Length: 219
Length: 159
Image 1 (cartoon, chains in turn blue, brown):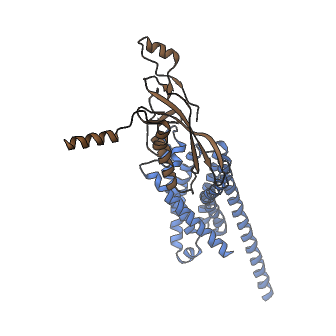
Image 2 (cartoon, chains in turn brown, yellow; image 1 turned 90 degrees about the vertical axis):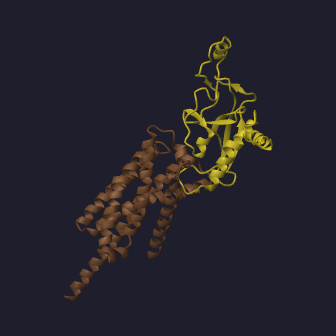
């Protein structure tokens, strides 16, 4: 299980780096393909500004979340974990989700695609607020569950691009491929976090029941 | 004198050749640079995957006159996506070529723009007469020494 977790986090780190590298084109003089196929749009400069903000925020937020789930960093540098958490929360809530929500209004695939991106953004924003609240209340199990939801929704950027790559290889229709590559990771990520949290909760309950029985037996 | 000759040769070589073949122009100014650009880009992106192959169709057998006396022919580009046999999509790019001036325009949104727009260059919409056939009524007015209408009829299908 630990190996799967490490492999998954490494995949996300590599994917995040690849996205960041590919996004450098947004700051060059020539427009990249993603922008060419989107334009012309109403209020083009607003859309381009939102895209650049989203790209920078994503380049910080996903690696930030990956650092935050590190058990080693949490145990050895708890103060760093707290400050990195605050910084990531600010980036997600004030830059990533607002800019992404605006970009979602013009998403390829029309309304289903717009709704998909907005749902993902809403899950990430609500989960981030809850994660901060639970951390402040020192409810660490709940904090972990909500923080994992944020990471899971941010990981959609990596998984959906990987799915698009595969769909292109098998010559799947462009627009359905885009929708499936969005909705499937959004729903599957949220479900996976709930399953992990439920499993951890069940495991903890079993452990605490067992230790209570052992304590009772020793008395 | 040799300097003047060299300059003349340079100017002749660099000037657009009059009435170059429209297909050659579209290949040279749009499709080859587009393929070269796409070969460099990463497939790990939300952008539409690059086409594996493109085929050019020239839509008009003879040049069409626009409202300003220019002559153009329309073209459409079909593209194949995906590995293996993939799937063809028709008219993913449409536009027109002015063989006389060597200019290539593509439909981008509601307007036509120079082909560079698909190569990432910031390009303003072309003038209204570009790629639009002058109407018969406008020709008659023009022949009767009136200025032809700028709002011609679009000669190309929507993208």
